[in-house]
Length: 461
Image (cartoon, rainbow, N blue to C red):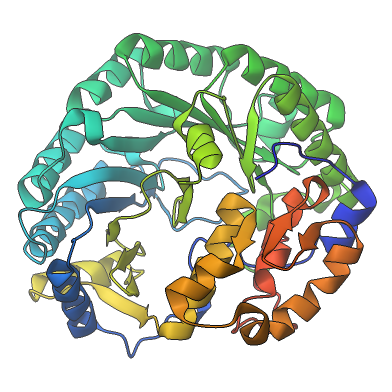
């Protein structure tokens, strides 16, 4: 993949339309309730019988938060009643036990991610209980082979607790910053000081975390180019290993919390483009490598190295160096990928508890991939992760003639080729520097399920 990233505003505006993020293919709208617990158990059994069973990756969803961030579209429960979290942990450990029994003991868990909600809503003692249960059920790989991460709300932890998290076995942290500007923070009800974040990042480095990430959001109410530039100054000075800069999708009809944002505070569409252009320029000038989508990393970070050597992958957490795993989703709403299937747990905590109480897995829906799905997934992953699709490689893996099989998709890509976003040659497709922000649009050409009128997705840029 070419390292250069060129920002061409007219083309970015032209291709900025709703589209999937392709953390999976097929995407979640194709999941269905005909896929049930027995299908999941069968998928786990098939994965154990594979010639070389994959290592295990585990995602744990902790849905609780103490306060509501108005921009948030995640599945969360706002409560100060910590007993609810203690009860949830009881059932979560039960699911860990049931899921662990499905996978052979010889398979090691190399990746763990705690998301939310706010994973640090749980106390460190509770997180310790969870880690012990996970190790019993899934058998942690040796420390040098693990990537164990969790998302941290800086308002919920102290520097001392950061050291304790490292002692529990976590080696990667992601801090939710979003924006340092006081007016923006007030507009989205997320007040946290720069000092808090600086202190915690310093504690993470002192504790020995292998990677520290920071999340930012552009397009929030009251953001200006000058105010976000000041935030970027502070983030660059912190020098986190990875930076995720998410585009805020304002969809108040879908997400009730977003109705608390005053419409008059929302920036005009052209402001988002200015903020995106600013972010790309500032971070790349500061030495960060653009990985893809919203992700930047330092040149020596594993993500940058994986992008360089062709091993970068995508999964439900975004870009990853460990995606060639069977991924087990734990907790309400969590999504997993086991063998040739995807699955998602029930949404409501009451349902989640009831299923486990009855001795059942809380799988609500899922999907088993067919041959065409696997083929298209490989093409989309090649585009999104490597910026290049090698026809001969795809043909050898799937027994097709690429240009014949994907004649319609290649025709759809012709306009992007004319616009200088990609090159379609005799043996490959390559994303060009001007097209690197539009990889989702390119992937959409290979999506057999996408309907042109669908508007359920965030915008692609």
